[in-house]
Image (tube, rainbow, N blue to C red):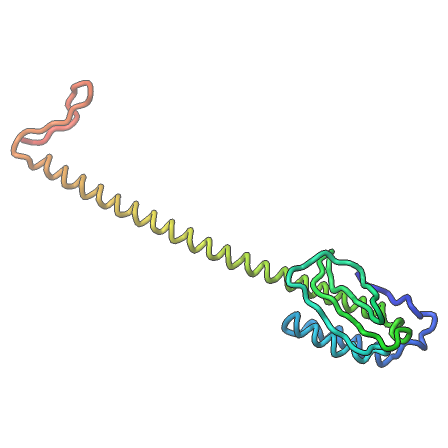
Length: 193
């Protein structure tokens, strides 16, 4: 979801064009960073230039958790980095001048939402990669088992053919007469002796 600026839009003089440009540049650059830690570090550094901000820190959650709304705590703001009710991290702002910071809240919420989407896409990519690797392993294991079954059947077929050849040679070349009969006593086959 995108947040449209609502705070102080009737007073655009409270917003700095340079700061908005800086935030826009941050948004276009952050997705190209290699991982969550680099993205959060970049964001924390960049947000220090927003008016009214004293410091910014981030916290990553080892396991994704249910997302909540941004909160306000003694002299600061916390923005969840979440997507579809999964909270990946949060940004904590310590504010020196909350009133100067307030007009930028919608833009920071938008940035946090964008990071949430990026983190979720990366999480889904990791899950898909893991599933593909597991599937590949299962296919390789099943292929090995099938090759083993084929080899066993091939060996059994060769052994059967050798046994049949040996029986046929013994039957046909015996010095005495041999015949095979059916259950009804009729002769099915007899050798030449």
